[in-house]
Length: 159
Image (cartoon, rainbow, N blue to C red; front, side, top):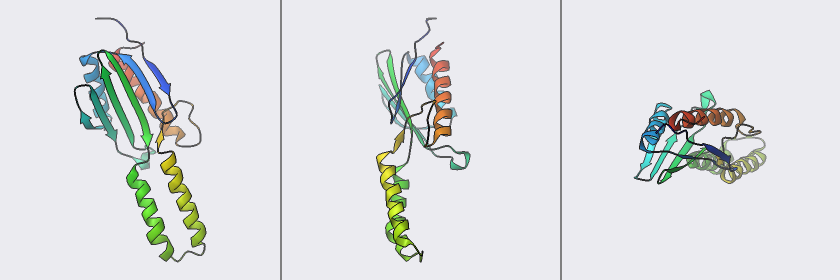
């Protein structure tokens, strides 16, 4: 089968979705490529594969999640950068329990700002990987758009 697959990538605000047709060999190739990029498998079933990648903050690289759903030869691949719940809970915990006793001059202002940040993190927990990302995590989002597009093109022999 020397037929080229057509790759479609959509940026849906919170996630990026790629759709492509492929078989077991191409799926294995993508799985292996993601494992080489330090992803770990969190769920693997017959028609579903989920992987995640931890943060490398010193390298400006945020945690990432990839979910692959298969329906026959049709594959739907969702991927996004995210703020882990542990980080949000940790910030909230520090805000409520540590900040009041930290001895800051403007503790009330710091408390309000920390709660606003935690609320924003809950609201915007996931970020798509669009090439024209702006404001929040623009470099990692752009970089992962290019990386995922390349991995998908190589795995599914797309032009």
